[in-house]
Image 1: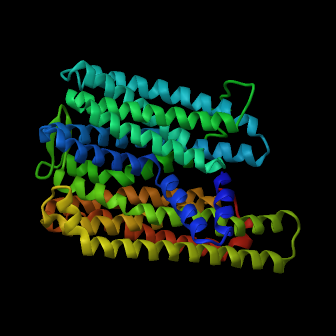
Image 2: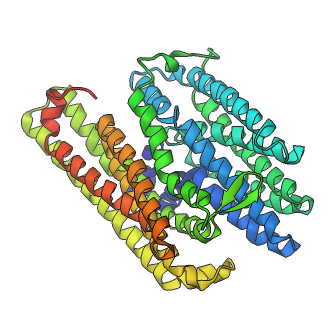
Image 3: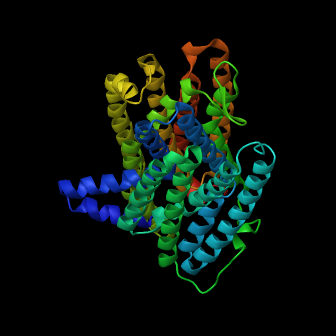
Length: 458
């Protein structure tokens, strides 16, 4: 669903500094998405709330509560995210845009009911001792974020990048401002501001989607038909979310690193804050990732399969494949260059960054490791995305399962051997999966013509 790619290409074709800057700025914000920007918002709320003389425990409880909302909603909605994306892509490719909104409404309804039921059950059992207002806000936030991950799937299919950017800015500005203004009510005030901002964000994106995909049908359950709900994509969605978060979950649960913050929610301050800071460094790499995938590679991919479908000669098909391979290599190389520059900057000024947020400079080593991990994650996303373009779902499933297993294994070893190895587990797991994924991608691209005509479908 590469609609926004056309608009970004138009900006790049101006061949001006302002056009290039605008394209990269839009791509960075849109590709970073609510996951990274929510983390930024949480940090901003924490920094701005320091002036209101909040007890540190209140800010910690707020940040930990939001972190759990993000992690749990990402993992749970992973069951449907990629399967839904594939179904919508197939409908758009088949020239059936009228099927988008009914399917979106059905998935949103199911997401709301399932997450709402889970949230209600948890609020009445595991969190029964917490104040009612806190439980209600956590419940609402859980449902909001789950639906937000669903609607965000549409962002790259919509050409209205200015409207998307405006909603992002308005939603997160509102979230930060409301949280700070309501901060005098303590933890519930901070959570209330978070919920208000994300409600505005969800409504804004829903309006954009509804305006672009008009239909007279309200609901369609076709996306849940077994033949449309590809199990491999369900597995990938869950495994990727779990693979990215499992090291954090293990650090929270480990007695030597984790601490109870509120109710049953635990945190590992030594590990969490460097991870949050490191994810700020992925925005430039994600901008390059979106631009290169949605411009150079998307064009080469389209040219190749147009030649296949329309009876192109072997020379034309081979030349198109060469352009695809070149676009993949160039895109990954540019991501590597950008992330390398960002990593070097963090290596140089990491101590100042930590001091700015009130963290001891001794955590600089862990921050450096986490920044390297964030860069490897962006590169892995690039590899996985190209494999998705090639419809190699089985390869992606293998890679994401491997990420879960290796991250759990290496993180467990690092926890056993102590602080000197903290952070290396996630980095080493990403490095291994990235190397294996790059090898699989190279083989798939080398045999692309054969697989296109003779290879079995995954």
